[in-house]
Image (tube, rainbow, N blue to C red; front, side, top):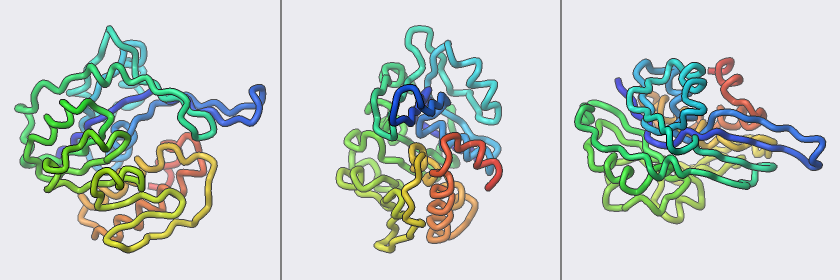
Length: 248
C-alpha cells in the first residue's frame, strides 16, 4: 500500500516561558503532513511526502527522516523552509511562502485508484484541487489549518477530520476536542481531561494514529479510541517522536 501525504514541512520553534531568561525553547521539524508521515512510516513501508523545503534544511531533513519517501519532495533555492513559531502554545508567527509557491504539476505517474491520499490545507487552493481531482482508493482530509480552501462538492468520498473551529466551516466525520477527546458519529470518546503543557502537534498525531489503524483494518470506533489515547500521552512532552518510538 502506498500512502501519500500532501502538505507542509515546517521548522517549528516552540517557546515555553513566563520570563525571557528562564525559557524552554524547542527547534524541530513540524507541519501536519510531515508529522503524520513520520508516524505512518512506523506502520507502512511506502510513505510518500509531497511538499517543498528550502536548501538550508533539506540535507538534515532527509538525513533525519530516511524512512519517509521523498520522491515528490521539491527543494527550493528561492524560498526558505516554512517556519512556525509559538509562545506558550499561542501562534506568534507563520512563514509559509514556500508552500504558497509550491506547485503539484501532475499526479499522472501515481496509480491513485490503488493508493491512499492524506491531504491537509497547508497547501495552496490550486494544489488542494489537484489532489481532490484524482480518484483515490481512500482519501483522508485534515481540514486544518485553512478549512475554507476546501470545496464541499469535491469531498463527498473523503473522510474528514477537524477540530471544533474547522468543523464549523466544513463537515467533519471526526471532531477533535483537544483534552476532551473526540466526537465520532455523535459519540464522545473521552480523554483524561487533563490540560497538558505541550498540545501542539497532538491533532496531527490523532489523525495519523486513526488513519493508520483504519488502514490496518481496525474498526473505526477502536481507531478513534486508540488515537485519543496516544494523542493524550503525547501532549505531555514537547518532542513527541522520541516518545512515539517507545509507545507504538
